[in-house]
Image 1 (tube, rainbow, N blue to C red):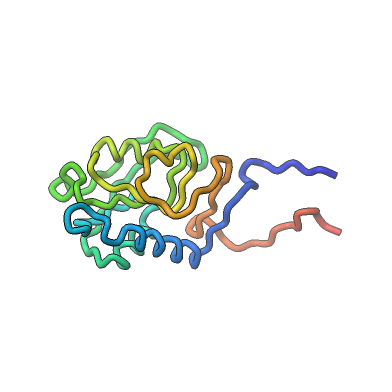
Image 2 (cartoon, rainbow, N blue to C red; image 1 turned 180 degrees about the vertical axis):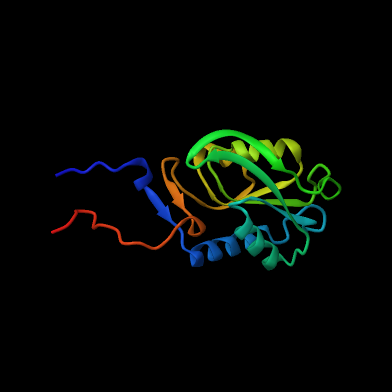
Length: 168
């Protein structure tokens, strides 16, 4: 008996512990790699998914200046045209030099492409990357296939799941 899987069933489930470990690994890759003296002036989280990783990265690297850029590119699980809903402080950002922009995932790259167009000298870092969006990210930790849906802990609740082969 062959069972076909729905696209959302090719999932990569990320726990709070895993996102914490992976965001720390991202911080370690970024440490000392800012422009000039290797430091970063600020961390900017792409909301909402980038907020938890950005908090962890800023803590690990001792960066106290943290802001957000709010970009909407999905309506639930349907991709839409990316639009900025809230920009970070313009005086802080400039052209992005010395700014670390953090998100949880680069998928198609459309969100990062939009933010990169506003801050071309910023450094873009994500915890996870898919092949279509890799060109938009400077640093990432783990690559997953384009057809994998990542289930982040802030989107999930624990519940019973049927066994793969069904009930006895």
